[in-house]
Length: 113
Length: 112
Image (cartoon, rainbow over all chains, first blue to last red; front, side):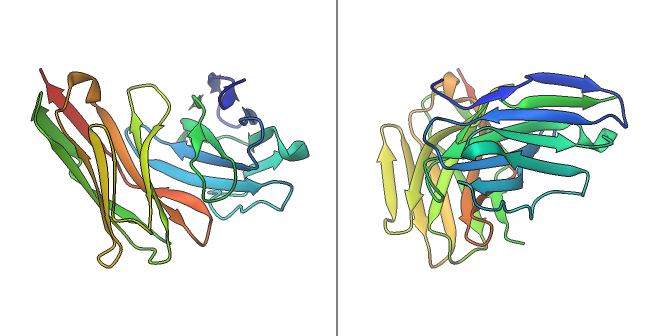
């Protein structure tokens, strides 16, 4: 596709369940980022992947959050034992390389009941 | 950690007037400063960016200025139109994390 693709677009789940969010970056982009946006707030950095290198996990809010990127392309963000405070829009972005313009997907709106 | 302060949080202008949004950042090593526009329920869209080797960049009705000494950068929108109404976020590249740190956003309302 032409842009960053994320799925699902919406996810509603019960507290305590695990969720997986998917991001398909723009073809050829080596850098991939996950951000979180709570209602009416700015974007909070979660994790950064550069090619096949070990990711920068410094933004992950707790050890319930993890992410992987297979083959340097598609990424999945996993949240285990979800809590109500995890409710937010999770946005993925990609760029040609580090320090290049980042382009965002439409996000996954996660609601924890 | 590194941070950025963005002002004002809300801005209302009449159609045709100019709008200015200002940001102050903390990472003195940063060399990349983008601005994003986000309409309600939509993805953030990159509207303009500037690197530290220039002080100003323009694209039609939009301009960005950068003062590296003072660690300030600003977005200027001239001849505003109702479709400019959105939330605008400034950001800078955090050289430690190599990810963007975002401001808290400015809600711009252009009154027709």
